[in-house]
Every structure is written in structure tokens, then in C-alpha cells.
Length: 116
Image (tube, rainbow, N blue to C red):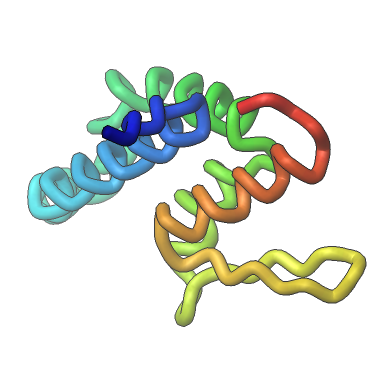
């Protein structure tokens, strides 16, 4: 019988990224309706949860390294074809999904010797 590998901090951080993505999808129609109804006042609808999201992303950036959570959530998902991280040695890491984030974060942890 093989033991199932216990999730590490990177795995937990990536699960949180997936939850944040799912919540955004659920709230998208609500946000669109609020934007139509309130126009200029639209940005105020998210004030209640914005502080929580900001602090959570800071924490996920610390866990994943290289401001990876911020890059994925706020840049890669808005780019056609996703994002790309290029290392000095020429290796390229496409960042199109949480799975890609996990792979790069695990590589980064191994490369830097940080225990995840």
C-alpha cells in the first residue's frame, strides 16, 4: 500500500487560487448587473471583500514566491494565451492555469531550497 502524499503549502495556496477563480466566476453576473445599475458607483460594491482579497493575495505571493499569485490572478488570466515566465537560463514557464502556477512554484521552491 502506497502512502498518499500530504499536500504542502504550495498545494494549499493553489487550492485557494482555484477557489478565488471560482468565486469570481459566480460573482461575474452580479458585478455586471451592479455596473449597469450604479455606473460610476460600481467600484464601491467590492469594498467589503476587497481588503480580504488583497491580504490573501499577499499571503499567497509569500507562499508561492515571485509574486506568482498576483501575476496569475491579475495579469495572466487577462492576457490572450496566458502569461510566460522566462528564466535567465532560457527556460520558459507558460502560466495559463493554476496547474502551471503549481509547477512553477514547486520548481522555484526546489531551485531556491525553500521548503514548501
